[in-house]
Image (cartoon, rainbow, N blue to C red; front, side, top):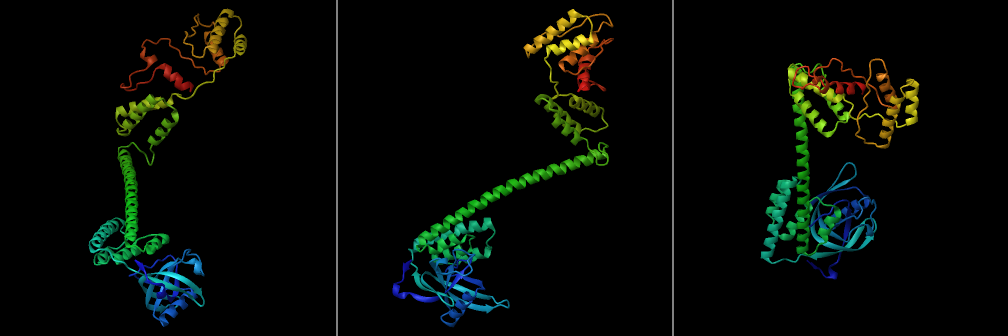
Length: 414
């Protein structure tokens, strides 16, 4: 594109535009409400019907001056002008050529001198290649974005001039005003095409990323909806089978207890497996009763509860002396045992075994030891026990199977 000689500078009325860049070869409707802008349109209609269209640098400026508009604009012809009842004016303009604007003067309306820019053609072969490249990218953009009507793509197909094709594409792309202004100010057609291709590539990449994100979100929502649907179906089936009363489902309660129980990893996995198995069982089956009993016992054990052991030998001596008169040798041995425990935190020594006939104080000594060390106390009588399964527990495959006495007492003491 070449510059016309300076003596070709002509004065035209100037119309500042908010959030709009008008390109050559484009027919655009505009709504004008500012008094100075309306007077500029009237001056153009009284003369040659030509007017300079220039974008404002800041759309919020109500009364733009010479420094508030860009230096490059478009010389356009006013095709139609219509006054509306609210006082605004609707005008139809057609862009003719790029124009560098200088010597903007302020009066009843803005006016400025315009130096028109002449198009410099490219070799025919190069022009054909650039037109094909632009059309391929634009068609790809139209298919992906769906923001541009397909009629626009069909209309572009009939354009054979590269300059007109580039300007028409630029007018239909969603861009910020500085980006559109940059395309308007690109006087070299090769540079303009490069800018346009870069913008199209960027928009295509952005749309593809958005599509991938939307696809992932959609899949996640579908998965969540599917899980919800299946869960509701399962609840309905279980309700029909008698597992659920009116809106009463204790599986959620069991899951909450499992979360709060503080089970070790291995025990937690086993309990979760049994709970999932229970959900699929008929509540009337014998196996469901066994599995439910197993889960209840697993959750009843105080996994994360621990007494804060007191290692105070003098306090222990005081409690033993207060609770029991005499038994000096026994109390001495107990105190030695507690002293070793207080010094060696993880001792794996023998347990205390108190032997004697009934009534000599074995049970009360155990209670005193529990109080002295701040431990909870429980008593387990094994008199008459002939089956070791009562101590270690029965296999849960048996109907009515229970854990052994040790676990029962551990669960009871909490």
